[in-house]
Length: 157
Image (cartoon, rainbow, N blue to C red):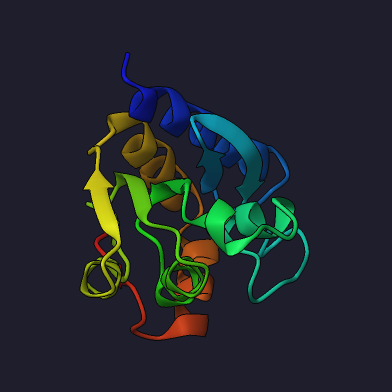
């Protein structure tokens, strides 16, 4: 198993935490020098939040880091990051984002690439299945979340 697979599996575990809490099954892990420094999961529903996406939660949970620290990080996320989360990646100069799946939801990957962020898509079937199962069982919740952001992401479900 590659390190990318190991860390994306940790992000999947975070997505499952969100699901158990009644939230969207999206998880993220921030890794520096091959060590997990923080984890996060989507908390939009649980916290009635408009910004606590998994990626934002993981970045926040890392606490304040130096510019040099961020430059050594990789963000692992189960789904393609939205424009807000991608903006945080660029703002903090995180050089690499590893995405579990982008076939169900396409975020701002082109923005990341245009800002010299390395983007790796694993096409992990576990990420895809977890999210698709949630949207099949909870279409009204997913449609309500999509309606809040308009066309900032492209749902393929």
